[in-house]
Length: 493
Image 1 (spheres, helix red, strand yellow):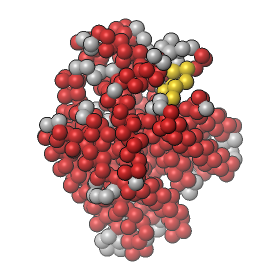
Image 2 (tube, rainbow, N blue to C red; image 1 turned 90 degrees about the horizontal axis):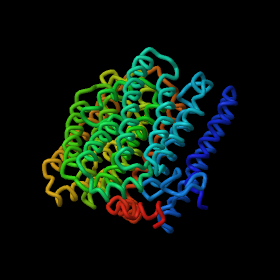
Image 3 (cartoon, rainbow, N blue to C red; image 1 turned 30 degrees about the vertical axis):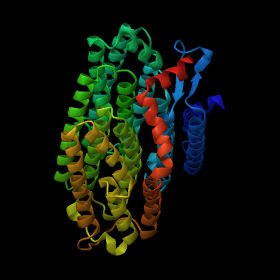
């Protein structure tokens, strides 16, 4: 059982390799992808249970003891994110069966999705800062392929921009890791934390902390580094957009969360204050974008940016309650964004447009779609008792306790603006005057809706069952607040 935490990385890796050899057999690829992702979910659920009963799990690859070898570490935060990622990937795969198109399916769509899963799960699980870079690259290379797969003009244009931004940020990532290594002489995250604690974070390490914020901020799309995101994410087809919107930025957010609680927690006056200011600005600019657009994709894409700001604002306070809220909200946002992107995908498939002004009256023929969207919209905006409310409440309580009133006010105000932006989609696209559509058939739309609705249902259950899940989130927060728990588990002291 000690190698359990390798399974969510190895299962998709071997599946991807097998799928590459059978790219012409679309139905076999579909079945194998779905079964493999189910196995990944099963392994990650067992992992959550193991971590909750036995504590943090670690594996030293090649039997080299930490801090010399490569270590994989699964604490509760990592296990929760790996499970959420795997569930979202399965739902998106099921949705893809009837929406991505056979041409893309034959052109290595399924193996690339599995490689993406390898990169994301690996990034959540690694205990080595250089390997975080390696898994980032696996994830990014897969995302490059998914972004341009199909080769439409807008995909290629946005793909070039996306690749350029990520090549620069990857170069900066390596440079930052090199700086850190030159100061502390190790790449193992637990060992880095211990060495920084010994020297008590001098100025050079604070500068490195800001560099890490730039690197991960580019990946996670915080202000002012989010400029590439709205265009790049609106280019690919719906299933790819759902994967990107739900998962990719969250890896950047997780990396900030991990490094700022494990490495740079000694002098938080400077680094965390900058993080807090940037988080507030991210929320404000995300809200402006979400309100301004009449394109359904763009409205939800700008809501990704708002959520990144809300989560990182909770992290910047370093308050136990706000941190717990950030973790809870991170998982909520992954689920609800995936669901919302898939639902607007159904709307786009029916109407043949992303322009809200050309939609209307979908509730007449597709009532199930309309009401599911409304529940998702309320959850996104944080209407009680849905999951968005609980995460925000914890973040607000923590920030009030910490005296961060301006940020708390911005988070509160953003809830109203988020609600306005998604209700705009409901009132104009789903309500309103019915129009004639020449899109997909009703049975086709029903299949796409059904897969989307499963993830919205999960998000609703996640909110209702928050009390039952609370021990898991408390355990995840504990490790972030007391880095010694992580260090002792890895270095076996």
